[in-house]
Image (cartoon, rainbow, N blue to C red; front, side, top):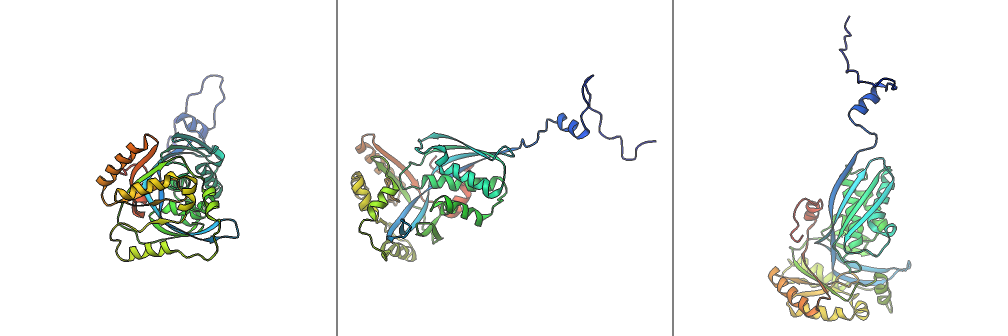
Length: 345
């Protein structure tokens, strides 16, 4: 009598003298199945930031400095490849190409972000990180924080957002003050140490010329110098001026400034000359973050390119120059996964 359930799967051949496998293990062996062998990959962009304005409010009891700033995401970006191998960890490895990173792997913010994500999600996976480093370090462009933000965002996208937006923001905040902003991007008002932020109206895109000469600057050293003589209860005149500019329709070049400039110029005198040259080229100019990169805002890309050529010749090969542009939040979301051209790669 036939089995009503059907003939069943065919028997797999077994060599003479060998031990027959259980049926489920026969099937796994036949199709080359291995437990925990699933791997996934995503390539993401880690977008840099500039500070339109930065005001020093006063010293804090925790040793940091209270600031008020306007963050802005820009198109300059590191490229990061993330490979996740399920069940092979928890472990994180790092490979870097392009610009060198002067921190050991265990202190690298991208590595720390991956470890933090694994711990928060409870996943026993191995993560391989490949960074094509294009953002200069110690430049005020948020390069390390941008990498951390991109790793968190990329892993969430790769695995179906197991943490969710709120928890990812918490994990990012534990890594660096500006990491939460850089996960979302766009234009935002930052307060506290820069860790409290909220989106604000986004101006129309601007062309930027980023310039540095003379090496990087330590954030801690610049802030330490800026704190000398700083008292609590400072105002935020540059913030108010920039917000009024947005409210009035953002007409003309933006009113940008940075109260860390005196400290940075004292440590790196080249900054003053670069700012003067950018202004002579018709740009609104200031420094981003704690330096050492300064930038000019141009009304037209052709003007920025002409200025870049002249400043490059004057620097005698010692000048880092990059033309970039501002990015809105929607663009950061659309361009995060590295499958669409961003315009400067």
